[in-house]
Each structure stands twice: as C-alpha cells, then as structure tokens.
Amino acid sequence: MSTARIARHLGPAARYLAAAGRHLAPGGRHLTRWLVIAAAAGLWELWARAQQSPFFPPPSSILARLYHLWFAGPAAHLFLTPDATGNLLPSLGRILAGLAIAAVLGGAGGLALGRSRAGAAYLDAMLQFVRALPPVTLVPVFIAIFALGTPMEVATIAFGTIWPVLLNTADGASSLDPVLADTARAFRLPGWLRLVRLIIPAALPKFFAGLRLSVSLSLILMVFAELAGSSNGLGYEMNNAESSFNMTSLWAALVLIAILGNLLNAAELAAEHKLLAWHRNARQRRT
Amino acid sequence: MLEITGLTHSYGPAGRARPALRDISLAVAGGELVSIVGPSGCGKSTLLRCVAGLIRPAAGTITLGGSPVERVPDGLAVVFQDYSRSLLPWLTVADNVALPLRRKRGSAPAAAGEADRTAGPARAGRRARREAARAALATVGLTSEGGRYPWQLSGGMQQRVAIARALACDPVLLLMDEPFGSVDAQTREDLEDLVLTVRGQRDITILLVTHDIDESVYVGDRVVVLTPGPGQVRADLRVSLPSPREQITTRQLPAFVQLRAEVGRLVRERETETGAHSERGAAGPVPGTEATAANTGTGQG
Image (cartoon, rainbow over all chains, first blue to last red; front, side):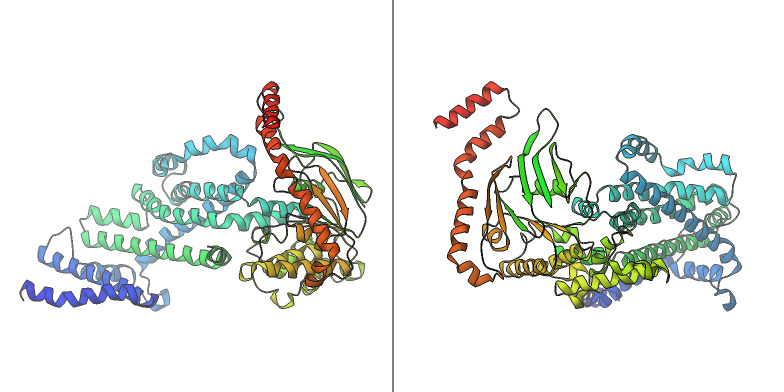
C-alpha cells in the first residue's frame, strides 16, 4: 500500500475523530479518547515489531506479561496471582496507609493552623522550610530509623504527602468567609458546631485540592521507597526485572503503576465529587 | 428595651483612626420598628454591629433589656445583606434554619422542655428543632423548600430563608442590615411586607438599616437619619402612617410623600457638607495646621 493511499484512508478517519471530539455527547468523547489511546498503542506495536529492540518490547507482549504475572489467578482470589497478592497489594496498602496518615494528620493540623493566627505566624516559615525538602531525600533517614520494610515505606509516603494536605487545609480554614464568621457569632453557635458545620465544610474544597496532589505524589514515593530496598511490592518487582534484564516484566510493572495511578485519581475524584456536590453547584450558580 | 448612649467608634490604629460613629444616643421601645437611614459610609452597619455585640465600641454604652451588651446578647438575631454568603451552601434550607437552634439548651424553643427530655435529649431536641424550622419556613412562605439547597433558590427566596433562620430562634431583637439591598424592586416590596407581617404577629423589636429612603418610611415606626461619616443622629422622626400598610395606597398618602421628602432632604443635606467632611477626613493624618488651612480653603471656595 502506498503512503498516499494510507493517507487517503486515514484522512476521513482523522476528520471523524476530530468531529466526534467536538460534537459527540460526553460518552462519545470518552470513546474518542480511548480510540486515541488504542491508536497510539497500535503505532507503538508496529514500531516495536519493526525495531525488534530488546529494550522496547511490543505493547501486546507487555500486556500479555501483565496479565500472566498478576491477573491470571483463580477466580476465588479475584483472578489475582500469588505474585499480585504478594506485591501489588502490599504496594497499594502502603499507599493507602501513607495517604490516610497524611489526610488525618494534615487535615487536623491544617485546621488547627488555619484557625490559629498566632500558630500560623510562628510556624509558617518553618513549615515552608521543611516542605522545600524533596521528600525522597528522607528515605535514607527513614531507613536508618525503621530499617527496610513497610514502616519505612509508609513513613516516606506519609511524610511526603502530608504537606499539600496540611498547607491547603490551613489556607481553606483561615479564609472562612467573613459574613459566615459573623453569622456564626451573631447566632452564638458553640465552638464545636462552628467547627463541624462551618469551618470543616468551608475548608473541604481546599483539603481535596491538596489531597489530589498527594495522591499523585504517593505513587512516586511508593515506587522510590520500594526501589531503595524492599522485600516485596511493585518497586521490588521492578528491581528484580531490571537486574535480570527482563524488560517485558519491567514495562509491565510500569503499565501497572500507571493503571494504579489512574485508579487512585479516579477514586479521589469520585470522593470529591460526592462530598463537594454543594461546592460545584453553588459555584456554577454564582458565575 | 434598647438603650444606646454616647456610642462612638472608629476603625484603624489609635494614631490614625478613621471615625465611624460619633456620640450616638438612641432609645428603642419594645415592639418598635426603627429604620436607620443615611448615606453610604455613615456608619449604619457599624452601629448595627455594635448593637449585635460583634464589635466593641470605643466609647458609649448599649443596654438591652436593662443589661449591658458586652458580647452577642441572648434573644438577638441578625439578617445580613449578603444572603448568598450568610447561608451555608452545604446545608439544606431546613438545616440552615435549624442551625442556630442548636446553640444553647436554654434558648431552644419551648418544645424541647422537660417533658421531652425523658425520651432522650438528643432526639427530642432534633425533633423540636425540625419542627421550629418548619414553622419558621412556613412564616416566610417557604414550606415546601426545606429540602432544597440555598443556591437552588432565587435571591428573594434566599433572603426569606435568612429571615426564617432569624425568626426560628424567636428573638426579642431582630437586626437587619440592608436586608433588601440586593434584590429586585418587586421582591423588595414583598419582603418589606413580609417584615411588617411578621412584626404584626410577634412581640419583636426590629432595627432595620437601609439606604433606601422610601423603604425607611414605609416599614418604620420611626426613622433615624444619620449624618455622613462619622455618623451622628441628624433627626429622629416618628412615622404616623395608618396600619396595615400597603405598597400602593400607603405610598400615595400625603403624609408618606411629605415624610419621605423630609427624610430625603435630611439625607441629602450632606451634599453641601460632604466637601468639608471629606476634606477633613483626608486631612486627618496630616498635622493640624494643614487641616485647618484646608478647611478654611473650602469654606472660602
């Protein structure tokens, strides 16, 4: 097939995709996005097959490896292989534990910091200073404190992801609308009611903005902490694959981590969507 | 029932304070509806915030029912101008109205009394609160909107919710800070009549701040006119219009027309004085000699 003929065939398809992206309902636009991903994967496949490079296996073999390594298990185990339960679940558990610690401590600390003018004034410079430290640099310190293993990894994730939550929540808690603050005072709402009904809901949008950043950070920290030394987890699998020059497994782990990241993001967005319905709607009405 | 004596307040640091109110004295009897009108920046809102106990005045005393106002007093409710910011967007209309009922056990409505407490204080309290909120919403004509959210309602309806929230805690003194400043004319008239109706049904004293001269006369038993900032009482006029008032016929009465003209004149008098006032205001921070010179200058000009 000559290139001119290929172009003639691709032309209408490209036009269709562009039109679909613009005019289709959201569902259709979703479809278009998946088609783009499929097309990119297809091109990669063709290129990798042509190159035969040991470093860039074709996506089809990566996906097959992904499936056989982790998702070819018995139905009783939700199709998870022992490898998956032994490595994927520990990694996921560490991320969730680290994020939970960051969300609870960061959220509570942020509320306290945001509501206490004096506290914020004293601590701000110090917090900004500590935050500027790249979280991964603390891995050696945590290895020294906790030795290799889950506590070290959870501590790394928690310490790295707490800052966006803490500082955003503090910002949200300190910028309570003055009219709302006056309303609370004029109606003599007791302190706990002010906290639960005013300050926390008002700070929630900022809290979630911070949490969104933390979710993507948590993945980086998980992989890094596990690469630094771990007896299981996705980082450990990557280490293994790399030292045995098993490029297909290495790529499969990368794809799996990308999928994991997307799922975590989707979960965070779903929670935000549910808890902040009022925020979205109220903002739409006002603008 | 409300007694204000020598109330003076200014904003800013001591050295270069900007005076807002100067020596306001005012007595309001129980059940009265007093309109406070004046040009913008005359300290109307400051006066209301002092009465509400939200700010502590620099000088002067305020007593409510005989006891001095040092913090937000019991039996007080406030309706703010900016309803979209004073209602909580994350709570339904009914929850917004019920919110202040959770403040103190003692000040909850009578239904949450001793008899119900044996059934479990939390549940009885909740039921009583829900009932009080429902009744307050019925008063403002929003019986069926309790389950909606404030941002689903029009501006006028939102301000009705704010009024219902204020009424739900059964206040003796209701403060309204330019309550109808952000709604359209038709809604404004409806809300004015709502205030008059509520006031006819309950034993409640109302202090209503407005910049609308017509409104101050239409709703008020008395109109207190403030001078431009720093606000002082320029006039305290009794409104002798027949009750019940009606948007069209009341506004046609010669007495209404005459009074609104008088209030208008009193409010507008500032135009001749504003120059001198703003000169003095602007000259505030600079040394006294220059301020005098500036004053003399305007006097001659």
